[in-house]
Image (cartoon, rainbow, N blue to C red):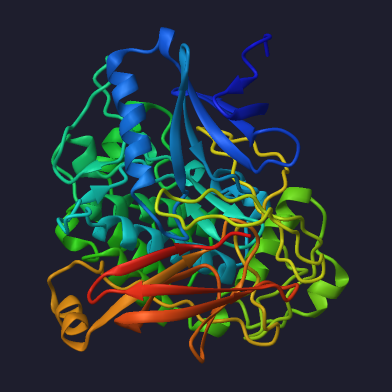
Length: 491
């Protein structure tokens, strides 16, 4: 990088992670020395049209308003001279574009766990509300394998909100007349440039799930015209034509997601997730630890260790290995694979609580695996290792905490919100930009971070957080009826 251009505001640019249609993505460090590491998506103003700049800033504003474990977190926008950058959290892992390959087909239980994470993120996105309580009616519009990243901590993140939009809003075209988004994953209504709702994202999710289960693109025609024709009119081949180990019930769900008529698809991401979890109970889905280790396995291109292979128990073809017969599906309980990890640097939203002392790394044998995000464009995102571990390991190795479905947004006026208001109850969301902590409210243990929308009685609450090394912090927070209190804990 030329002299004088290796900094952007308070951030020192370390190395370029990706170059795409809308700028570049760099790994950056806040300040000098031991400052936290983040991702910065940069745009050169002198080479940017007003429309592109507007979409770039819209992406930043939208990202900063969203707060969910399965969505990439946006911190701020920084401008210096002829450059502007979006600062985001940094994670380490692989995109599904790198994992959805026939020679690296993941276990069925792994694929289902990843799919449930994606659906949790879509459920939150589609139900998000503005500060005044109005529905935002968000649609991602570009859900595809390269925009879904699985971290080494076993958490799947939806990234890149560059063309996300309000429901039924602008249906923008490129100069050649092709709608923005990736054609093999766009819904028929998106291809027809009609108003969109969350069911359009469900079609895209169905195309991703098809590829995740089979290693083959659902719409793999040789020309854009043929792909468009297939998306709009052609029957979708069953996923079992490519992978016979997929259960018929799962094939039927994928087929319903890929219905041409949005009214024939599942009504919501939540309904889809509940049906998927009913087909695959907890014991047939991979834990976060197992999801993360499979990413390590794919990233290093080395076989899983004998110790890890021995700790897996086959559940038959239904949830077993398909791409690698040496490893089978998980037991219901599986010990966390120990991993040396350094302290994470995770960005916090604008509503974060005040910081105290400088971060201290947790002991290597207690910290979860490291995680870093490299936001990458199509077709082959590049990721490189860095030091970050934003997602927690389950602290109890013999019993991984169950995933709880995200409730409907707090300000909704439906039965959930009315009941919460009548009972005088609100919600608490807790995140940690460095490592993970155990959270207790009063005498009640809530579990490890990230915690999302845990219901609590309204009023003052004493929140105690404990790091793996035993360090504690006690805070007083106010829970308001029918509202969510977001708390970010730093040392």
